[in-house]
Length: 427
Image (cartoon, rainbow, N blue to C red; front, side, top):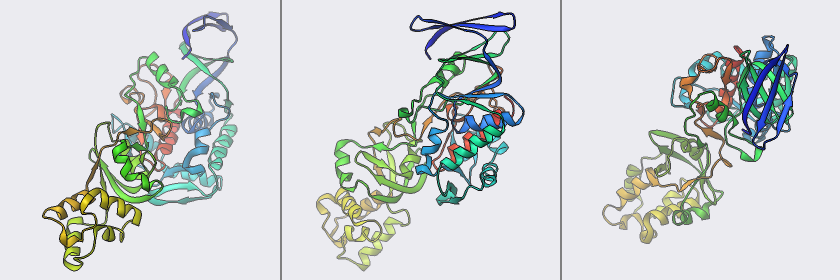
């Protein structure tokens, strides 16, 4: 946040402000535009909040620093927007308060947003695990939101860099921008997290939260690819671009989905999911054969096919390239030996490693590759019903800026819709 202090005083029926910027330049602005609600951020949560508040007859302005609203919406789901998930529940979210999301998710459900999509005759389809995608383009969802904003009388101002938020003597808010300022009874922070830094994201929401006394839980990249140290990476680099269905586990959580080998390490849905639970220095477990009891399977194969090699056996269940790499990594100098010639104890070790391969990631690929930001504004200081601050009346926090992070698969969009709707009903 660029501003260091704000001097506010009333003059007749007008509110005047002098913003002392870090450059030392003083900008004087008068006669602000007045609104009932000012929403900072024109992403999924901000637009949903604006629609809901506008439908209540509130005069709403949405301020966004981007060239146009909803830029992350357009990028989502490979351009087809995974706009919700049929199986959404509070169990699909990470937060220091695991119960916080329940109220908003119950007030505005996945079926509510699906009904809105159907109202606009947007064709959609279900992929695996309840994920709902547009048939055509993410633009359909953004157009829906913008049309609803227009019908609700919402004003959207793009290219508005926010330099500060202050409370006025009348206990409303002054929202400072590089092009002027607005006064509003309520301010909603829908500023998102730190992922996608190339889109001009900032920590503005966290800064304003702290300014008004809120705690911000530790933030880090989530739903992010994991990297491997050079020695371990050298084993898997020949597989770059190959995927395999696995079970990835860490800290009591498991996800059965595809793992994708990259030139830096592991990605794919299974890894993105488990990355939200993984902590640096911890190992993750990979079950390379999720449909098989590896101990019983290997014992049976040794009885029935004594001359078969592990690579041949694995190639019946995974790609030949992956079978070769796993065999070389697990058996090393015994890689070419038939299963009947394995030394004592090798079968048990192979079975264990195939079912529970312990891998130590070197790190993750950071916010530039992260789908979302883990952590955020502390939920203990927010109302789960209204998303309003318990510390500052009229101040609301919604979407990714809050310490609520969904699993991969439409859950973060559903949190945006639900939290935005909840705040919009009260702001």
